[in-house]
Image (cartoon, rainbow, N blue to C red):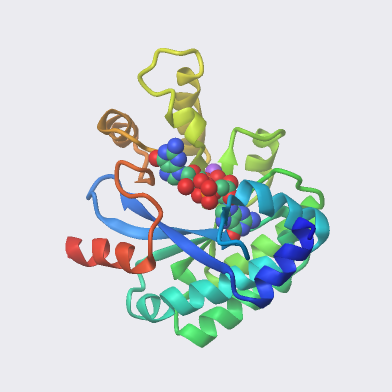
Length: 252
Ligand code: G
Ligand code: G
Ligand code: MN
Ligand code: NA
């Protein structure tokens, strides 16, 4: 069976689920949201990494169905909690193809209507990887903003034409890629880049979410430079939604 047909089977047989990685407010240390990370346990019971199946879904045209499934799963797992926690965020990863039409806006509208969540509960993460139609992307982002849904640029600095995208798209958050966070405190040339990215985000008035924070030194470095939010193994691995909800409740 090809990977594409296995993906189709996986959709039919509900082999997909979401791991939620807590997002921490670096000033308070509280869990203020999650990123939804798609997981696939295939017919043989193996966990297939998203780095393998997302590109296949993208190139085969299945990604729209997969994104729709992610939104449905988030609604099931988190809908009730979101409806009663207006300040809590759930970040959903979109593929570049999801920004080629406004269908994604309808999917998110339905999720919000069904769950009673507020648009302000939702962040969508976009990536410049494979971006084609920038005008359409701007239209989709404008429609999301009109509802109060915020937009983050993911994997920043790992793609190409990053700077021109930052300037020309109306964004709310910049996610600092793990590859930059790893370099903090190592003295490696790349470690200089983190400070530049942070300065640039401040200039553009973008809030920041650091990815892959693994130790206190990295967290402190980011906090003193005004990075608001972080994810990473220092705080929590991706886990069940309940795990993140408990972290949030524990902080209250
Ligand atoms: O935690 P993890 O190994 O799952 O993430 C691997 C990559 O897969 C990340 O780049 C992440 O952005 C991507 N990814 C995870 N979930 C989704 C999803 O629901 N949709 C898309 N398009 N990408 C995802
Ligand atoms: O959407 P994105 O490209 O950011 O996907 C995040 C990926 O990074 C996921 O695969 C997730 O499991 C992984 N990850 C999350 N936190 C850490 C961390 O602290 N260290 C490392 N090495 N990987 C992490
Ligand atoms: Mn992401
Ligand atoms: Na990323």
